[in-house]
Length: 61
Image 1 (cartoon, rainbow, N blue to C red):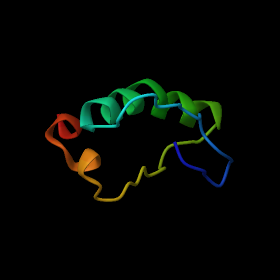
Image 2 (image 1 turned 120 degrees about the vertical axis):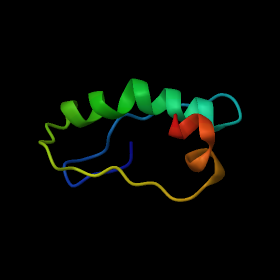
Image 3 (image 1 turned 90 degrees about the horizontal axis):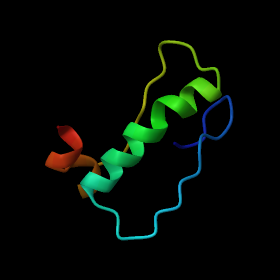
Image 4 (image 1 turned 90 degrees about the vertical axis):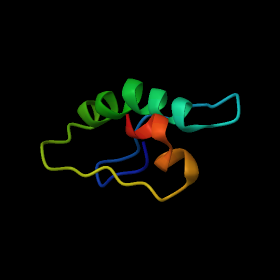
């Protein structure tokens, strides 16, 4: 998770080449716990760019 107005989210070390499946796994395991730890309420928006791993089929499933 990137930096928010409430501070940075979890930092994840990626030891292999990132692809859509790894990106999706990282999000599924860390996005919501990071948001909760930062005490973010409803209404926040997660954004990313159009990097191929962000738009891969594995990410969209």
